[in-house]
Image (tube, rainbow, N blue to C red; front, side, top):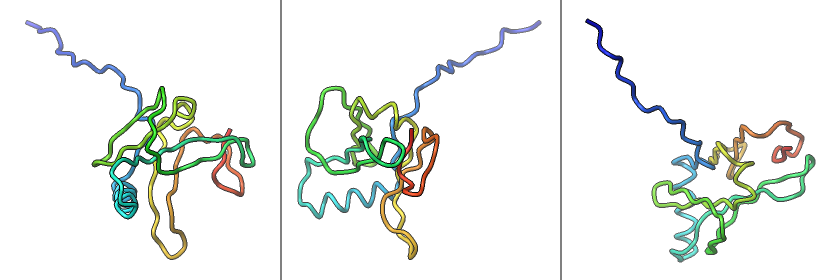
Length: 122
């Protein structure tokens, strides 16, 4: 006797707009604490500019804009505006602290081309 195969719901979930690594989240949290404020969030956006038309912006922001996509990573909120969200879906924000590089890095699977500046995409 055969039994119907059990099926689990495998509804596809859209990837998070951005992913903040644990290392980056700790650095953001430390920077916010240095500011002495508890109302700041990390805002990530793409803006016109760069050698291929767009560049990244990362900054602290207390504003809430209509259509913002908010993700929480260990108590650190990352905010992406609705216009930037499609360009940042699946992007990973990390923090490098090495002798050859220090600062936030963005690994974006949506970046089609790279150029010498390293932070632009179509």
